[in-house]
Amino acid sequence: MREIEVQEIEVKSALGKSGLRELDYSLNPYLGCLHSCIYCYAMDFTKIRPSADWGKYVVVKVNILDILRSEVKRKRKGIVGVSTITDPYQPVEGRFKLTRESIAMLADNGFSVTIQTKSPLVVRDTDILEKHRNSIDVGFTITTTDNRKARMLEPETPSPASRVEAIRRLREKGIETWIFFGPIIRGFNDTTGDIRGMIEAAAETGSRIIYDRYNLYPASAEKMKSMAVTRSLQGDDRWWSSTVSEIRRIADKSGIICNSEEEEWQMNYRSRYGSFF
Ligand code: SF4
Image 1 (spheres, helix red, strand yellow):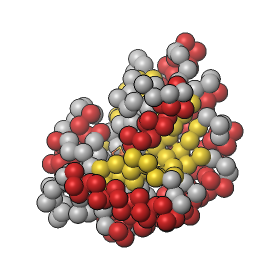
Image 2: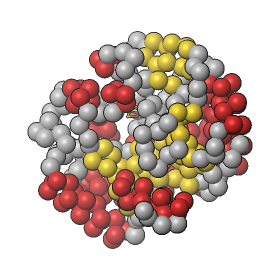
Image 3: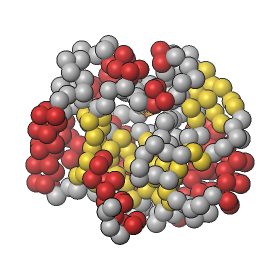
Image 4: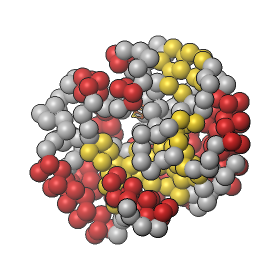
């Protein structure tokens, strides 16, 4: 059994600025992530420990609900990403329930919430998600439906099949769901079989897909070197354009809505502001 360190801290703010264009705020109840994905970009943004320790510790913002309670009353309403540099439903959430209480508080106070996770634990909060189904959506990251490959990339995450099952259960309750297919890594999860698996998961659960390629960040690149497939982690534009064509071809055949991150952002921008630029 692996050793895990859980550290409790107090913070002065809850809603942070997000680097993602589609979000007004980010909310990260935890720092560090026990899911230990070797491609994790958050390693490069969470500078509190050396990246070699990634997946072995989690920092819990124990007073975040007290701070958020005051911020939701005075901050401008907007879209909150939960979370952006950690998985909000990683194992410690089972005990601390900070994500559960945060999303309820945000939605009760007129904020929209977009959740992204790899954990079926989110199904525990179906009561809140159902009540606020017009202002909360849930995205599941699935890099591949091939369990063997998933174990290499994401050694401590719940299986891809359990995530698909969780999406199905949320959809049954009328909750909006989406699948993030990424990061797509050249020579690893970019085969026609991988793409088919993702499209089937989307078709089974009535979800749309957002996809993105792997971006090279120093800490994750270091971890990725341990993998057998390191020819060209990021891939070139020619590879990416042929991968996108294959995704589109298979998605179109199945009638699945499939957008790149850029397209998704443009659509969100138009729906919020009416026109683009
Ligand atoms: S679940 Fe997300 S935040 Fe956690 S290790 Fe994996 S990629 Fe990083």
